[in-house]
Amino acid sequence: MLLIRLYPHDLLTLSILPISGLCIWALEHQSIALAISLLFFSMLFDALDGYIARKTGRVRDFGRFLDSFMDLISYLLLPTYIAYSIGFQGIYVGFLLLMISSGCIRLSYFNTIGFTADEEGKPAYPGMPVFWSTFILAGYYMVTSLSSVLFSNMLYAICLTLFSAYMVLNKPFFKFTSIAWLILAPVYGMVLFFSFHALTQFSIVETPEFEASALIHAAANLGIIGKLLMTLLFLTPIVVFIHRVGLPYLSNK
Image 1 (cartoon, rainbow, N blue to C red):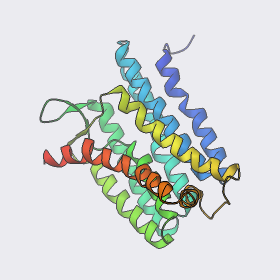
Image 2 (image 1 turned 90 degrees about the vertical axis):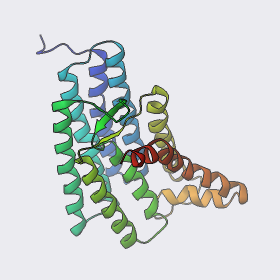
Image 3 (image 1 turned 60 degrees about the vertical axis):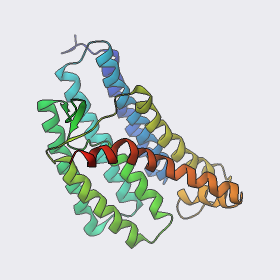
Image 4 (image 1 turned 120 degrees about the vertical axis):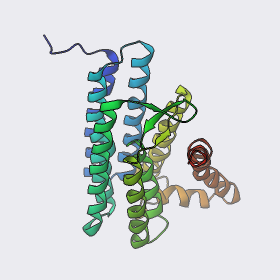
């Protein structure tokens, strides 16, 4: 007999572990884009387990703690490993440690009080949630294919510093409540970065130094249409973030 009964949403939470194993396997085979795609895949499971728990009326402290342990792996440790594999090394490791420590503080605090509410009484996170590390890492990976290592690392260091500060800031942070958004965001990232991997893995284009460059090179070969598609591809999540998160957050200050 187990110490505690595991419900389907608990097993969904635990499924993040084998996905994390696949992520490490991808890194060992130098498939960084695939590893990031798997991070978004685990984010999808992370979003659904809590949603299912609330819909079935089985929200409990055990699930919150279990979810936090998985968050530590998928949103703090694995992004650190991926960033280090990309080239965020040397003195920059200190910024990764800052992110991990701030994330641990934020997760521990969340386990203590749970969700909070904003000024309008809507559900909100206490501090910036740790899952944003995946989006920041994805942006860093994209920048590495378009600029120098020094610029990319400095920009990522600044982002990690701000992210670490916002995680422990005593202020409600926007929370997506629609199941459509909870599914769309990770699926978008998962498909996008798997396409980077597929373009190089299946030799659709010549393999560049970074997998992310493959999609950029492929789009360039399609002329103006390809460039427009690429622009929409990259601008869509940025516009959505500013509209749904950034503007409401700044307006509450």
